[in-house]
Length: 301
Image (cartoon, rainbow, N blue to C red; front, side, top):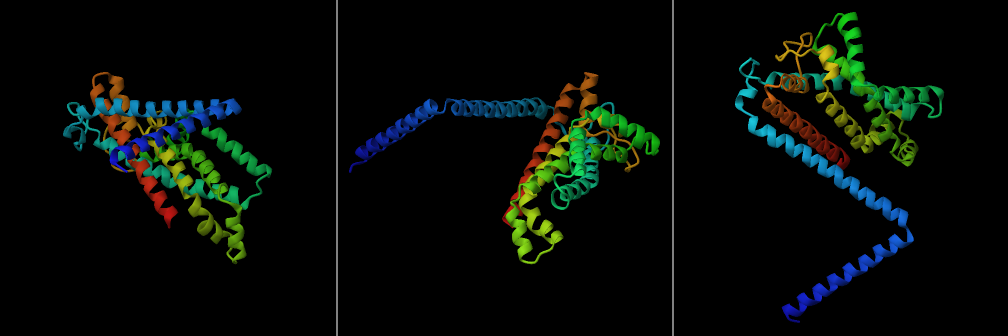
């Protein structure tokens, strides 16, 4: 068979496949119109979500990258140079401290709710209702609570420690609920097989149940990181707005989000605010990529 005839036959085969697939789709629409409508709406929603993501990301990077200079990464913030390096370091510190406080508590609380408690008991229902309610409270309320309790009542003052404790309370319900859902998604047969081989409850939870649930747990941690680095209202009342590198956990300092908010609010440094937003966006994307790599490695192991 010559090459021309082979190409012609290949095109005819492709056309027949397309016609067959179109006929199948038409038959599905006729038989199940509601299902076809839901499928169409799902595709439209996915397309809108992807478009908005790329539109926002490209818009911020296009306006932010040209305003990035080496002066923005100088060690000190001055009136002539609006450096973001001190705020970037403060962001790392607050993120680490908030996760250090919230992740262990949320993880063990989720383990208790999903593995040790009676799922239909009144206490479990009350804890879940409380967590869902706390997850919906505006961040400004957490900021006011942190200012009254941590800053004033406990005498911490405006500090990174007060801000970290406030943010840990804010992300705790999110970590607890996502971890619980991830643990509940693990099949019961995993637990039964482990018990059948003689493993105890604690060993089953941490060696059998935890690894398959790791991607869901990390997803909750990533969402918490995104909420921490993008938070402004709670930190203005607890960590302060001073654009300097904090000398310790007991001193105040602004994060990237607060720094960007202050620059944009003044109205004279919009370009620097976009540059700060670009760094903040790249930071969140990097955290997402690292978490995906960790989850894949855990699943492979």
